[in-house]
Every structure is written in structure tokens, then in C-alpha cells.
Image (cartoon, rainbow, N blue to C red; front, side):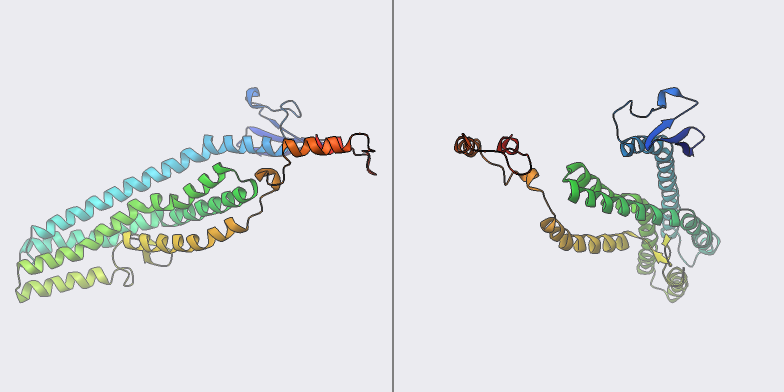
Length: 293
């Protein structure tokens, strides 16, 4: 019985013929794999095509997403640095404070940071979940097959969220420096009028995002800055440092992999010599030579 299973991106047809998977690409015969001609299993054929689709279509999209995230984070950091520079060069009692500094801060609160959060917050969380899912599956594969490449992939995917979130966390930490900048201005001018204006600005920054402060918002309103990122991964690595050794200690390793139960050449020679002239056939039609071969 033959039937088409799946058509991907208008190019690949997955066809099963008597239980054997074939892959057909009508537009490019070079990518067509016929049943049985390559000596591969069905899972190997499917893995080869899915990996090809991933690196040809999905991976470039992920790279483009990451580059846009870095660009947006850099633009936000530049805007925050420009705002801090304007604060330092302007006294709160000057007219420029109300005309230039306050509008620039309001733009950060109302437009710049919300745009960054709305554009990349959900996708960043999805990338985190995807990386951790791949890390978990790769570690499970390592426990089953003892393949070092699976352990490397698990470790890489485990730390990848740190690299993905570093730029936005850095941009949020730049926002935290606005408060310290206000305190520097207060130390420069200890007048009551200056302090009152700085208090208004501090309350504005503190009450932004329902009290979470100014920064990149993820999840249920949590600001993701460098301190938050360090806390998340410090807790995660602490948990893994406790749990992973237990899994490694309890994993099943067949004797064929460790050679713990293999007979030495001397032992095999002695057994063969002891069995010479004896009836070496067991009740299951298996000889001692078959066992020792």
C-alpha cells in the first residue's frame, strides 16, 4: 500500500511504501531518496530531511530574530545613555530640565521600553523554553546512549538563554543607572528645590510598570535586568548541581559498554581447552564456540 504522508514547504513529499519511508522532491530530484537505496532506516531518513529543513529555513529566521533583538537593545541603551548625559549636564532648576530632560524620560517610559518589551518579550520566553526542552531531551539521550555530543548539546542549550537575554538585560540595567544619576545630581546641588524635582523623577521611575521600575518586561511584569538574570541562572545551576550527579550515578550502563564482564584471552583459552573432547552442544543448539566467538 502506498500513500503520501506529508508535503512540506511545497517541495518534500513523504511517501510510505510497504512500511518503508521514501522522500520525494519533485522540483529537485537531487533531494529525492527512494526506499531502500541508501541503506538508512526510516528514522534516519526523516532526521536527515528535518535537519535540512531546520538549517535551510528555520535557523536563518532565528538568526534574524536574534540580530533584531540585539539591534533593538542597542538602540534602547543608546537612548538611556543619552538621557543620563542630558541629566548630568542639566540642573533641575534650569528651564532645560523641564523642556528636554523630562520629555526624554517620558519617551523612555511611554514608547522606547514598551516597544522593546512588546516586540521581543514573548518570543524570548519561547526561545528559553525551546532551549531548555532541547537541553533536557539531549541529556536524556546522553543517559541512554552515553554519546558525548548529546551532553555537549545539552550544556550548550542550557546556557544559551543567558546569551539570548544578555543584551536586553544590559539595557534594563542601564535604566537602573538613571536613579543613581539622580543621586549624583542631588549631591551636586543640595537645595530644597532641586531635591523636590528629583523626588518627582525618582517616584516616576519607581512606579513605572506597576512598581517594577523601568526596563525590559517579561512574563507577568517582571523587569529582566542583569541582577534578575544572575538570580535566575544561579538558582537553576544550583538545582542542577544537586540533581544531575544523582542522575549520572543512577544511570544504566550496559556491561558491553564498560567491558566489565568480558573474559580475558587467557580465560577463553582455558575454557576452550577444558571443553575439548566434550559434548559442547547445549539444548538450544548453541555451542560453547558460539558463545566464545
